[in-house]
Image (cartoon, rainbow, N blue to C red):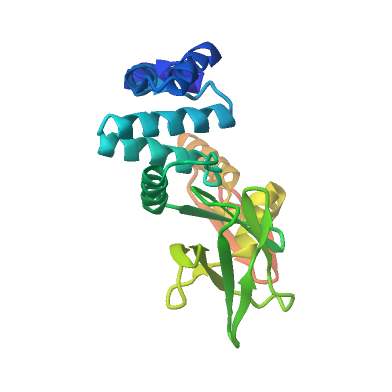
Length: 260
């Protein structure tokens, strides 16, 4: 549904496996203009990951053969964003390899760290499985961390066992070149374990809410005040919080003619 909506909004043509096969035949016969016509404005979202990668590779090569260098780079960049670990076909010409390398270096890697229990998981758009992702935790006494462990298309790093980590930063390198960072030594990203616990267990925040911040308290007070005004209450409503009992609400009502 989302793919179809994207195609309608962008004017891209949603292609299926049959159209993909036609473009593949045209590519094998070096009919690059036909490949461009079939794939340049195509939405390949309905294809498998392997088919999408191959379609973008064929389009990039065909655009390059037609001397459309910028459009070739566009196709190759889209290829590496979708599949950062795409394996180039054997016997690929040097000119194509050079264009692929340029495109790969233009991909902006977006790191997405997530705290899951005592493990920090780092995923990201355009992040290769072959990347070297270093996670460093900051603590009052210094830093601790190092290379994280690949897990599918993500990376994992356990928090320090001391439990004193207050922040972290990430450095992702590809082939020895730093390609993305998240946080820094000077400005680490904060670790808020309490916030994570509240998000995972709604009852924690409910039981920890003081009476004077709870919506139900002031709804009742509002009703009583309104009723008191209508009935000619001469006194008022006094609410206090006992120092030794944060969950107690005391209300004193004074009515006309009542003995004190």
